[in-house]
Image (cartoon, rainbow, N blue to C red; front, side):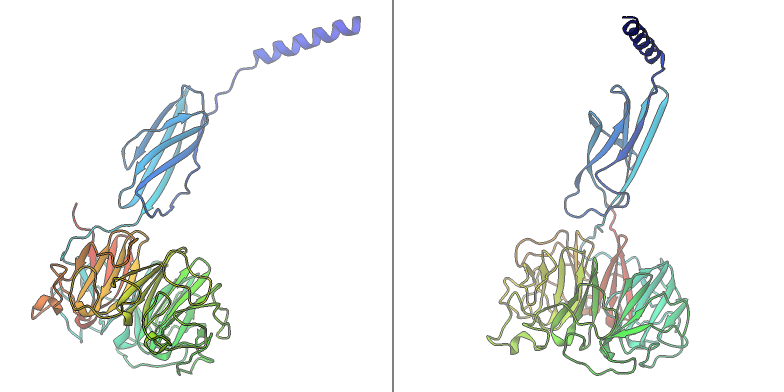
Length: 479
């Protein structure tokens, strides 16, 4: 009995002690729906979600690019619906209670560049003025017959200059006409322009693509790819290894799972490596970046197997299908989707998922009304191509360099029907015009003469203007 009484007294003391302990108010908030810097494609309408710890009567204040944003609370969860603007979107939420507060910040990127039909470029690279088309511009900025795409890697801007067999390297992305390069790769000085082989020379280099801490360069006319494990930092830079050839001096084209025939471009889809093996009329896919020149591709598109390299007109049945390719010059992927410029068939093919089996058929086609059509445009309009030399995308829009129509066509969203028309045109005033430089004697910032490459980068579109020997940079049109 005495033991029981003492237990009751001890329990009462514990309860009193607990009741006298002051309650600590905790305030914290953290976004859970997205990671900072996430790129959003598709709909601009997104829901952001945050986890919150705070009293039920805590104050919640939200902002989107400095404007009020309303969050609703349900228990430990905050939610807000956001309409994303072009480019970076800064989203914040602050929770306050009893003199304490916490703020969560999130940046979401919606890649998009608004353009108007026929708008002028903001500036050019490779010429001293916006109206010059000189083939002999100063050697530290000269671009001769450029095609394909540049790349911005590690604070340096790499521009392939096919006609002088080099890659110009700028310290940062140029922002005005007439910017000089800092150095070149592929030549010993600014004043050398000859083609070459080995690990330090090119013969008409094509696309430049970021890879790890370095980059790769499509050495097109040497039928190979040069791999730089680290970024070149000056004249005389040497690649670390070669793909597509048995050694650093060989240049003969080949048709096998390890060889190329004038490859124009490449892209990464996560770990997968994708090459437009242009004159083999195929696209090769490695599930992992090849460790050496003896690593065979895992998947081939456009051909029934990895030992066949003929265009679709020579295949049994003769003619284009959803599984054939003719001179594909460009590839793009966001890790899920794949786009191929099927140049010789005057069309662009879209796969909703990067294929994992040989000869997988495409899901959509633009430039032709169906998969069996492969003729060049007789009628120039928003749904036809004369020579779709290159394709690029930011995940929301598709850009096609329609070379022989002297224009760039822009789709503001991924087409879901075959033959869907483009939304905008650059280089021409309307969708039915096609003349080089709009029929003018000299170019202007608004004209193009056989655009043969392009690249979207941070809200700007860089267009390789082949016969004007320059890169025209288009920025977003005023709202």
